[in-house]
Each structure stands twice: as C-alpha cells, then as structure tokens.
Length: 195
Image 1: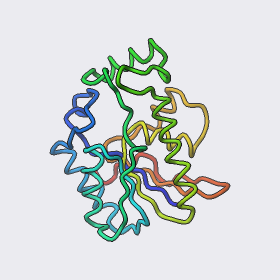
Image 2 (image 1 turned 90 degrees about the vertical axis):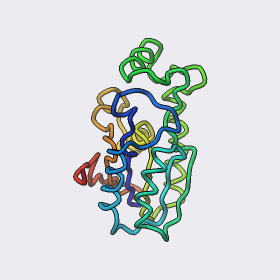
Image 3 (image 1 turned 60 degrees about the vertical axis):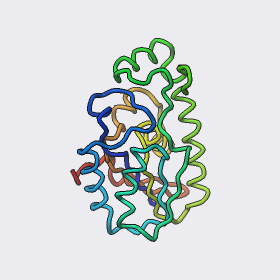
Image 4 (image 1 turned 45 degrees about the horizontal axis):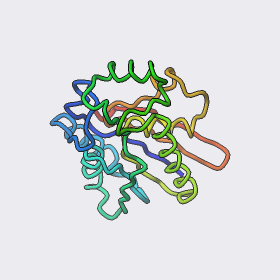
C-alpha cells in the first residue's frame, strides 16, 4: 500500500492556537492551503479517499476530491480528532498543562476522550487499512492526533513528547509511506512544499 496522509487546512482556532469545536471550518488561508495540496496531488491515482467527518477535514478533502471525481470517498468516524470535551476553548498550552497534571495519555475530560482513547480508535482504522488495502494507493485526510497515531503504528518506537514533536503535521502537511508486509518506507514526512 502507498499511504498519503494529509492534515486539514488552517482554521481560525489553529491560527490562535486554541482547542476547537468539531464543526470549525477552514479560514481563508486554510482554503488556499487546501487548494494547493489539491494541486500537488492532482495526478495521483487514488483507489480510495478516507476522511474524518469533522468539517475542517471534510472541507480539505472536498478540495482534493475535485481532481479525483471518480474516486470513492469514505467518511470514517474513526478518523475524528481527539474529542476534547470541557477543554474546548482552552489554549494549546493550557490544555497541555491540564493533561500533563492528570496523566497526559490517560486524562479524559468531561464529555471528551483521552489521548489513549483516540489512539485505540485510530489504531482500529489502521488495522482496517492493512486488512483491506494491501496493494492500493490510499489518501487519508484527517487531524493531528490521528496522524500521530498512524505514524506511530508505521514507524513504531516509544510514544513520547519527542515523537509527537518530530511527527506533528502542519496544516495540509503531507506524508507518503509505502507499507509492505515486512517493510515500511517513508518517502516524505509533513511535507509542505506545496505551500
């Protein structure tokens, strides 16, 4: 399988570094970014496009899909961003401090999920990919935490802050990875050449 991972374009919340609601939309810059990643991927023949149902990822996917009108699009709840519950509206730094204080990976805010909950969910998606798309070219348009988990499944190693910092994607950052039964090859990681 050749896997293309794309993070959604910028939102006003991203710009302000604030945890955002599930229905946040791309801002003007995010729409431009989505058009640019769409142009970069226009000549790739995808067998399937997967996307998160959250609006910012869905808007990014729709821009890309303009050049892939014959490609099947599958919306998967498993690709949703970490459900942040009562952390909504906090700055990234404030949320990090709360999570760190209560157990970064295991803290579950009210009406939300822990990072481990998100990782378990996204891990199921990755297992389905491996099972169903051995010889396919797949595009996944999603969010920061799901991309981190997918990369962790592929690359392996200890998940810690260094792993996150090294593999966190910019808005419309692109990674391309070949996944064979016994090998993995990363071609690009969080590439933003199109911007």
